Length: 296
Image (cartoon, rainbow, N blue to C red; front, side, top):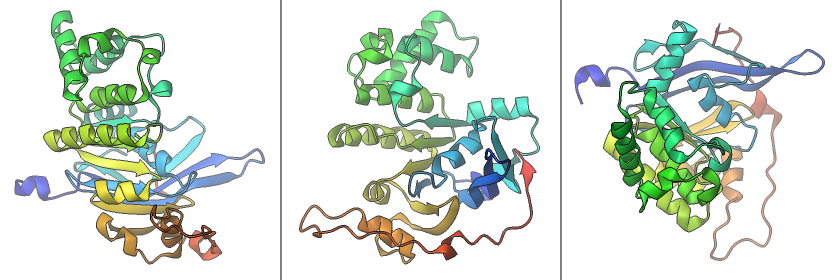
């Protein structure tokens, strides 16, 4: 890697805050003062309970938060560029070319009235608008082949409801990775799949990330999976980062919340008679951040 490339992280988030207004007019923060960095080619896992702010963090990077969200940050940089200073139209174009996101369930992510080829053409046209019809079809078929789909021509003609869950997830990966994003956000990409298909999908994702040297933010509830697939792990609780460690060291984490999450994944061999109940401490909610960042 050249010195200039290693001079700064791929992605930097400083004091990200996302809030939603309640019926009484008060703002309830869903992400509170989150800061993290991602190196080029690094695989960063984000774990935590449902509602801890994992998916909102990923969507904030891409500018995909709902209109009702109030989002601010002190800093949001991608490959050294200040995304907060970008005009909205330029940021949309920038995110579309530099980042991609794989969502949880292809049944809800793929358009049910469009064939796979039509949807992939739409995605690829944003990057290569002058590509001819024949060349575009070849690109679609090649992308499907890259995720080890045996009959890419047939799948390209298919509608989402004609595909299995694993096949649909491979299509999503092909759409996102084949356009060459430098950052890929995978939000529970295997949660709707059985164990065998999950392993197959992860193997495909691993191969393509390695090929394109793509940075990865992997959002998951599956701690053993994150430990085996990622380089580093961020643990979130109630919108905050409470612990960060190397993925291989997660099993030795010290924070009681992380210990509670690990205990909720009992071993298959000689499991405990009863699962322990996670005891929560109000001190985990303490937030000393006072300054407000720039709106996103």
